[in-house]
Length: 75
Length: 384
Image 1 (cartoon, rainbow over the protein chains, first blue to last red):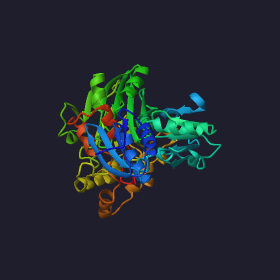
Image 2 (image 1 turned 45 degrees about the vertical axis):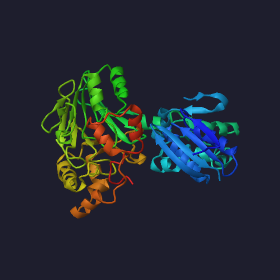
Image 3 (image 1 turned 180 degrees about the vertical axis):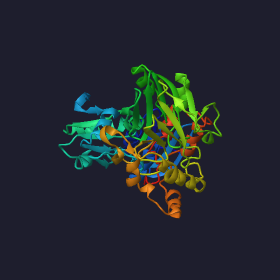
Image 4 (image 1 turned 90 degrees about the horizontal axis):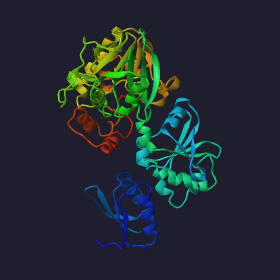
């Protein structure tokens, strides 16, 4: 899946993954896609809640060996 | 009591927070975890007011939070591990608020904090202490006499008991689990191995354990130090088939997860609620009835902070419990069976994995153990 911006939040703990993702998303135009890579399990749950609450579209999320990858389309 | 960090933000330790709960002091808590986590489990106290506002709703600023926070109260910001609470609390300080604290180590530290309180003296010297794991509602015990100690329902944080024993110059000789726990990971075996002590477990709960242990059975007395201090096992099934109560020094009855202060144990955590409901009834309505009303009941859990007594102690006389505990007042057998098998609270987090771990069948990392133990204990039938 193609992304317009990639946020590497590996090794970062709350609140940084979401703070970085928000900054990245703010720089995008509606309809563009952000890819977020994170390893902190706690912030991953929060990330999903945040995407839902802000009405952006969670297009895809996957986990492999403790690395979480999300694709979010800006509303 | 507190340490200042940059910008006037102060941190509060789990120990300091425990004192606030014990002393029923006032505190306002802003819990910035997600709604799901908050609804599952939160900090409670008599005069503690809590508001939940997830940190990811405060990324644009804390103005919306400030409206909900009283100006003249001590405010504690709480999150899972600490990072997000600092993030929010710092912004509140920048917005000109004072008296703002964050919880050091977050809910993780709160879940792991143990506060020892003395319950009473023993007849031939020595004392019995209760270790209150206030964040999760677990209670464990240390019986000390004549240079020796026994630890009952040891929790995972074994260093706390080791240090407590060291400070009093006593050696831990026995660790005893009243039953195979399903809500928390036992530290009994680990502490026994480290201290060179014997680890006791009821054999009926230990059919599948992968390590050696001493059989905790009725009639087998355990002596601590001065041989006058006896721990007498009393077979009292119901929460598990092996559940065994301990009568210490003919005065204190450690009831495990059979009888609590405001509730009774649930029989369903090993998947055998229907089979064990009758055992539970016999234990509570017959076996315990035969014991003295004067016994001081010391359970392995509390469900609500209202069960905490003076200084955080959780205990009551047997006679008082027969007057006040709703679980001991269900005369009709069918109704009792329904109460303990139907409409029970959700099971404790990861309870099946926790049981496997306590049998030695799984060896999760420390981080995984922490994760498994998140949330309240939920071992009583009325913990809704």
